[in-house]
Image (cartoon, helix red, strand yellow):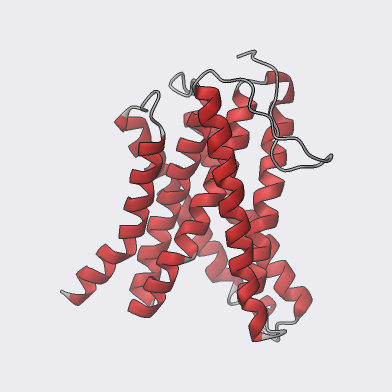
Length: 246
């Protein structure tokens, strides 16, 4: 019975975030089946990553870990591989479909893919660990996957309706999310100083702020308001594109 409760709690934050993102899509609700299929695709994407990361843990890369090895593990082994399969999941299914018909849909399907990934990952952690680990992940790893899904989806939404800049937007979103994910994991696993682990919360906080602003922008666009502009220096993470070509 305790094991069942542990598994249920492992997927509870995922269910809550899915409900929240569904509620945010207030102007044109997405069909249930595409949402479910996208969620399942995200879950399937987790499987090769679990094998990949388990294999890496048996190699010399995980032995005598120093700062450079930590960077490689955080940015290449974890962040790059996880964000690649999640982005691939978004691109291969929802992005190609006719129901992806507004920019906000990118965020919806980006988060659904990320939550499918997080659900399977959390179940795996519940199998290997205890309540303490799952409780901590409910407030850290799962929300982190969600906000990274928002950022990825934001740029897929931009790419869908800006054909000339399609790959530019997709690549930009991918680089940003891998960078943030890599930083988050680096601060979590680094051995330089235990107090640096707190910096991971700063990365999460910034990512939450960024994702909230991105949701606001795409929701404004869904309302037909094309005046939403975020100005800033060259290289600013959030941008508005003036093209309306589908």
